[in-house]
Length: 287
Image: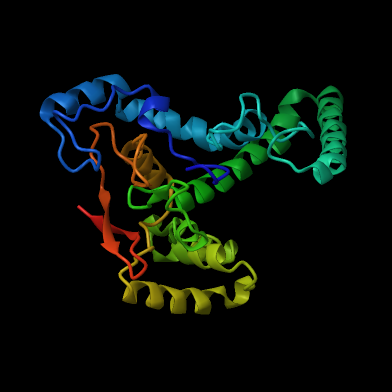
């Protein structure tokens, strides 16, 4: 909640949802009265058309908005944080020259695009460059969004965060597997298993993609033996739609939090077990 760079959940307060009401709901989102559900749903809205439009906007404009305005990024960063200001809080001082040169290259390329519009026409540039550009952006956002967002993924605040917990706050998914095994096989091999072996990548990014399948299978067996399941539903456009409907906000308090939907109901909850050192250890349990 305080260290991640992107796909950081909105809290109830940040989203502007009605304040938590202990008389009709619990923090874990397991028990919510019908009155509170109606109040939250009316405030947040969750219409199919609205979610579809949100999905399209997210997939097509999500990356430029993140780069320009830190949309869906770390909320503790100051307003106006972006990836083009060399003095931005997201960069270290030694990055200054690299960002300046990167911005220079971007301006040169923008000038080339404008020149292309003048020389060939905007329609030609739109067809041969801007549409493919948005298509690539769409795939990048779809894959990374589904890797890091799901109602079953826990999110940790500073007091409970460890590298291992943060690394396991992700999902492996069969990219386009919802369109059948053939499309799933094509998508997986065309992208070198970037979606299917993502949990492994979080834990150790030094394993090359051509060994990732074998390593991911071994890791999955090890994790499932400990009761940790990180195989999500197949990734695709319908899954983006479902996840956006199920993942609205998290609570403003709690060291381990899960997403709640527009009714204030969470799909999972943390439970705590006493460790040998006397501290609590968060373990997720599905409702």
